Amino acid sequence: MKPCKTFLYPVILLFIFVINLGNYQKLHAQTVNLVTPDFYEWEGNPADADGPCIAPGEHRLIKARIDRAIKNMREAGVFEKHFDSRQRMVHPLFDWPMKQAEGFDDPGYYAISNYVDLDPDSAMVLDYNGLNQTYDGHNGCDIRTDPYFWKKKQDNQVEAIAAEDGVIIFKVDGFFDNNCSCVNGNWNAIFLAHADGSVTWYGHLKNGTTTPKDSGDFVSVGEYLGFIGSSGCSSNPHLHFEVYDNLGNRIEPFAGPSNPTTNDSWWANQLPYYDSGINKIATHSSIPTAPACPGIEVPNEKYVFDAGEAMSFSIAIRHSITSDSAVVETFEPDGDPSTLIDLTYIRMGTFFLRTVLPIWNRTLANNAPKGKWRYRVTYYSGSYGTQVEEINFWVAENCVGNLVHNAPLTQSKYYQASNTITSSSVISNNVHIVYDAENITTLTPGFQAPVGSKLEVKTNGCN
Image (tube, rainbow, N blue to C red; front, side, top):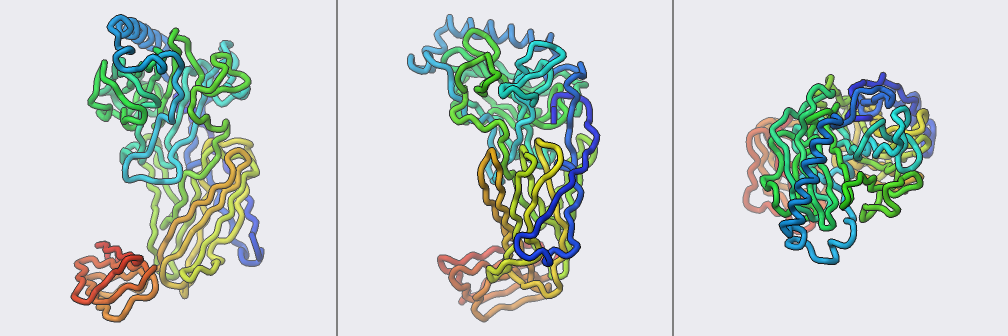
């Protein structure tokens, strides 16, 4: 994906090989859906002269404004006021400039789309690692949100944050943030000066969400700057992170064999070039949908099912490399492995894809055990290492109109009622109970949920 380009790459179907872990007969004729990366993969042709994230003229104006501001800051003693002498002697070591907002805790939430283009030839591109994960004239690092970037934008799921302590040089806000191409060059952005006089840019922010702080205000590393949007010359929500040293020279902060701008990394912990890993695993009522840009994706995530119901399993993977693999498993409420899904996923085809979202369709047996199931993915990547992610989903008890519980609850269960639930039961240690009544749940004298047990009360009922 090249989020700052305007061309939509043709959809490429991935051929996905599925190998059974244990008994091949368990899979029978089950196959993996043919899917595209995230069901939407924006790509641009590096040879197309449709312009970078910022038009050259606008870029020069921003750069000149920053240079003047830095000069004024030096004369006013701003750096001496906010930073000690040791900080002012060395370039910063950046933390990652994004994080998930409070209340969101997926295993991952981003994928690097493009690095800095280090080849001055307009017909060529070169990233810091000697490859071509960039496009011509690109001055920063593009980091998209993933999966479902438009939904993440709508729900304010991912924040741009200060990569290092700094002073706000100036900020821009108030511009449209649902761009799908370079029809509007005005972006929402914040520009920070750091202790040594180096500068970072944070561009394409969501309209109306930039920090209330303004020019001259100090921000700490990790402090909120704004939510990720798609303002300016942008084809989807992402952060454009651009770096300049104390002399105004553009810097590629990733150290590598083809980076002449710095001999050492400007990151506190530099990510691998292929930062492969799981961003999310989920269960669904049906395959996610992705309307045309800028339509909001519909993940169709669901975590409560009835016996005999159809369901889907997904893995959102960033920086997927051919032959990286994942062991995909489910476990029944008693802990036993299930044949519902029990396989190894190996991605074949194109060597590198920024994101992929393999999905498997399944149907729960009519006699599927009721209770809390586990869905577990063990991902093996040559660049990232091994990552294990696990979530729970439920096979619910049959829906009733009104439910009354008096006996002890000794097994984890999900109870549904279209009207009321009343309980005076005692929940056993290590047991998880969900009461889901559309009208009201009443806990009467005698009910106990001791330490070690878990009770959830919901109001969906049988819907």
